[in-house]
Image 1 (cartoon, rainbow, N blue to C red):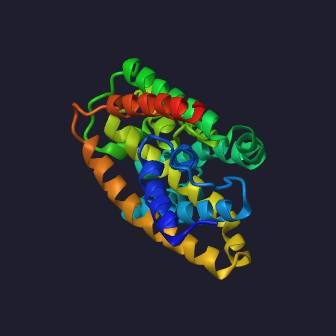
Image 2: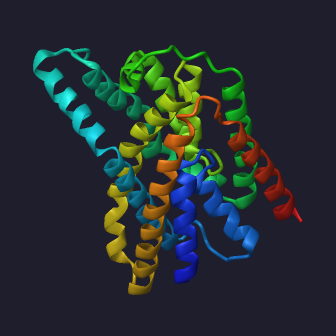
Length: 282
């Protein structure tokens, strides 16, 4: 059981770390263990709490980019009668998101419970948080130079479906606590030649249906908890929504500056993972 204060803290943590490339699930597992909070991460209530906070995050992403989603969905609908996914940039981007979401969606439905049951322990989450830092550094170090274009969505729409699937598949690493969905998909975007700004935007667009659908499927479980647990989930979801908005606002501006890179996040994950390993191993 979480106190309301713990729910507020973990909700805020989830809202930030879900969109920052630093792993929300990893932090939700590691930090309570470091602080000495006795929380069973596999207990039904904690999973319900995570569902509520994830749904809030997905809702914030959709609202933040609602004008873009309006254009993208319109593009997909225009392309269907003409049987042409390349009718315009919005249509291509929409179909790219659909196709790129499939691998992570399938892997999540089939393997999510098994993977998390193996790796949900704080020590393993700390190790994979360190590995997440290495992934971010390698992607930054060996990224392809992005082409210079005018409109962001037009640049993203130039990706092939194979490249989109690669980026989407890398999201699946987030099934392992410690790996970041945002970090893995940004890394994939850099590898296929997107700029930091475009890779972040594509990452957020890809994350919205994945996080939202996964949470929505389990949202009815909120009705099965007691009033105290429901209140904690509502508090956590509200905190997640506020801090998710602040996170997406910050990151879209941070990566719009050409000199800003993934390196600070890579260093943070590597150092935080190692420190957590040392603390938890003592």
